Amino acid sequence: MAQQTQGDTLSHFYELRTRCIRIVIGLLLALGVTLPFANELHEFFVRPLLSQLPAGGQMIATSVTSPFLIPLKIALYVAIALSLPNTLYQLWKFVQPGLYPKERLISLIGVLSSIVLFILGASFAFYIVIPVIFKFIIGSAPAGVAVMTEIGNYLDFLVSITLAFGISFQTPIIVVAIAYMGVVEVNTLKEIRSYVIVGAFVIGAIFTPPDIISQFMLAIPLWILYELGVLVASVLIHKRDREVAPV
Image (cartoon, rainbow, N blue to C red; front, side, top):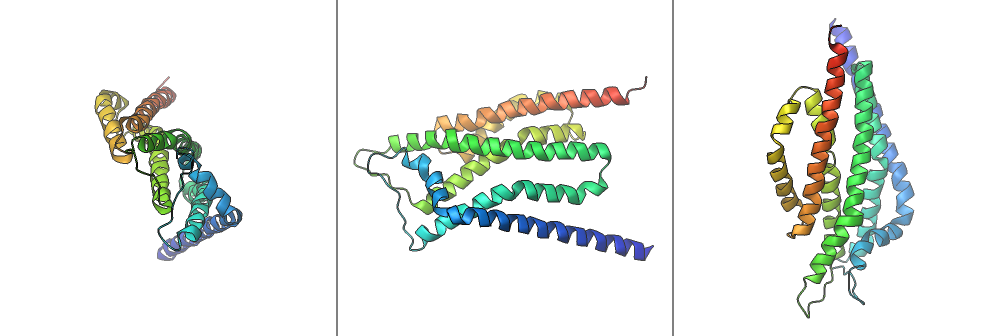
């Protein structure tokens, strides 16, 4: 019995090692695609800021290595994003043997939905929120002040905002998961709606610049996504209860 347990442990370890190796290989392949286009990717991601700067406005580099390292960091971040589906798939394949057939389908749908929602959140931040933020910030600069953002600071700001929105857009997945597993009742989720709305605006105030527009642009989607999660959870739980109810 002990030998069988040890054999199962080693089997899981080798399986985990295999999945980790495939995750790393997927990242390296994605990096091989993005590195040759590092400068083009840099130009693409700084466009939201440059488009809001006045004529002749430009970005600056305060570090000697920034002009070389920042495009490489952008290429790495894009490679991580491109390899994310493979990463999640490998993790799902690792836990798949321990799931029942119905749980496998639900978890696969959850992984795919998570990827789609993260992309939607990051895209919403990049194409809509960030240009609005920069327009507000640059427009608020006093007369005689030249806005010249350091490229390293800009990259950190860009990553933090896109991650905040990408993660925030996972709200429906979290709501459905905790309701379906019975951690929180759907009725309870409906009753705490007012607290969720307040929490959404608090999160918006924490993860966005101190302007009311960007705070609303994070808080309102969070609220809508929460309501969507409650709706989907209600439908799924109602369907499950009907299936297990005695005839």
